[in-house]
Image (cartoon, rainbow, N blue to C red; front, side, top):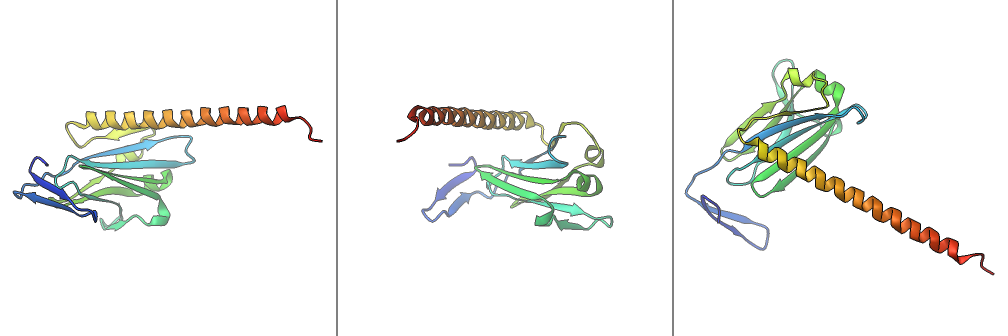
Length: 182
């Protein structure tokens, strides 16, 4: 049961919302992260959350000198989109040089209307390691969630590496323990 109506899910993956017509616009937060070790690449992340209905489409656009907007070509950057309940996240990895030359825009389409957020030029030319552009009052919670997800991911990677090293050591000792075969 959602705060503004009933939500029914069917076996085929279809979701039906029965509402009183009230919609909540998504709260959008943009993140721009630079890393000097990332081979001249930068990551832009667009998070749309706390919306009803919980379906939003995020796309990345480039604005040309005349103010015209076009979709970012697939060949220009890697794009990833993830959907969860009441939250949609889109990430694009692009060349830093292209980010400084072009104006990138996160477009969020929702039943309540479309919203467009661009990375201001001052931030695109900034050389800080990481900066966050916040467009909501309560983005502290989403920042904490993002940091927690990063921490969990890092711990999982370290755990996998320790497991692989231990397994490799056991296999190495097993091979050494056999001796020459006759």
